Image: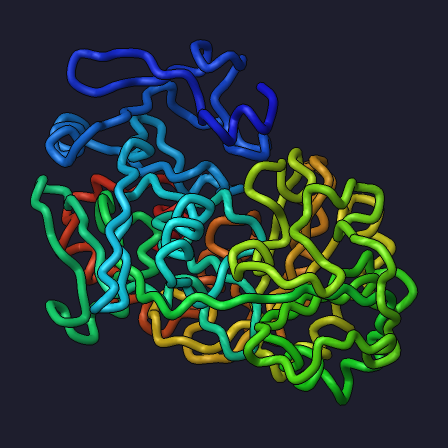
Length: 448
């Protein structure tokens, strides 16, 4: 299936007796896969409910099932051997301007949410590098954008409506749960099926985006905080060769920028004279506007436009979080593997994220740097490289992105989360029989 068609339709619908279903052959492909095509789902059963009652019936009729978002997870976090449920029909958006919140259905993507609230004078605080992901899926996995003062996307969550294992509709919020709410936001799909989620919003703003080329890694030894703090959102891209970042993307709020003039030099990097794609041989038309041209926040914060295939398309992604104060040391550690990494790599991106108090967030209680790898679709080779990278990052108490590929041992992963046992108690409260547990959770959260 063409990737753009896939992003528009996510499959052809087939009528069912109570719930709509989609099967892989009926979607026009030999197998039903995630967006990037690196994962084939383990079941051909996909429920497509139209309302909360349909969700409740699906939960009651299956001993095990998993909620499936926009299919942008690269690992099996949303996989099931029995049944998956997609809430793509839950596309409602309700803005409460007085409360400065927006409540969206579980099928809504950031690409749908952003123009809606912007047209009404509001924005969310940050966006990921692509807008095609679902709001619910992104928040449940601790997905993030960039910006040393910006928390990940989950930090905007104010409430969630969840159908739990016994079919009950429960509202999760700070008001109802107190501090325990912090253990539910990045919930990994373990607590139930989220039907609606409420986010904090703020007044809309305009942004510019500028790209610089060839920043020496040496500049990061003493200037890392200054470089990543220089703009609202900063991304550095590298192929790990020549001890440098090939590109620096600076995303600035117009209302926080002193001058519209673009300096020709940024810590020794030179201003790009043309629009760039992070992967040099890919067309830049897929990317959001650069060259300092002002535009809405949602057309600058992501790297890629909603109506284009983001990134490379067929790819594998891996991401590791380390303490930001150790970011330069972590980069040097991984750089030692450059000649093993580069042949299988599209590009690596460095971003910074503020600390948060969400128990299962990769940024829990530490300002973080994320080292993000976009790999060529060569899993046998990549699978051999990941343990080498993880070993290099072990001294930094590395935490992987929950929805991307990693090989970290379960015991090691679990040791990185001080509140893991408290999280498991919450899961046991709402799903005592493990209805929403799958192989991913059994291994990484409960495995030894």
